[in-house]
Image (cartoon, rainbow, N blue to C red; front, side, top):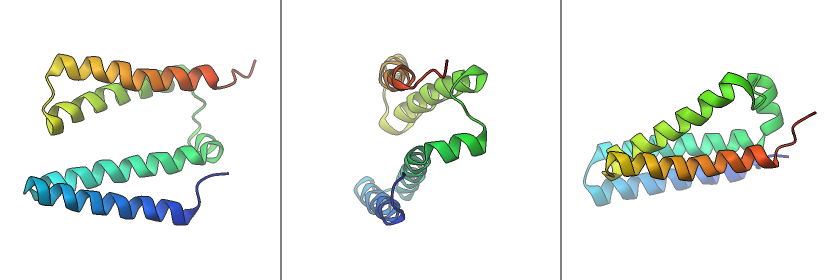
Length: 117
């Protein structure tokens, strides 16, 4: 059972409010729009993961093979690049942070997921 649609709507509304705040505090419409895109994508990902069975069967994702590896590498690179471009982290530090932070989530997810054997 996934998230209720009203909860997802609240999450999107909170994303909009946070993005407006970021745009106002930073004084840049571009920063607000980047935050809106990132937060909306995160909300969509959370919503999709809450309906994991439907999402994985519809997209034919089983968490193994080359697509799983590609997802791990892509999420680490994307998080590092967002940290570099939006938060102005140093490149090496951003990749180390991304590897440890995002990598720990992936490892935990694969460890608690049944193997199906």
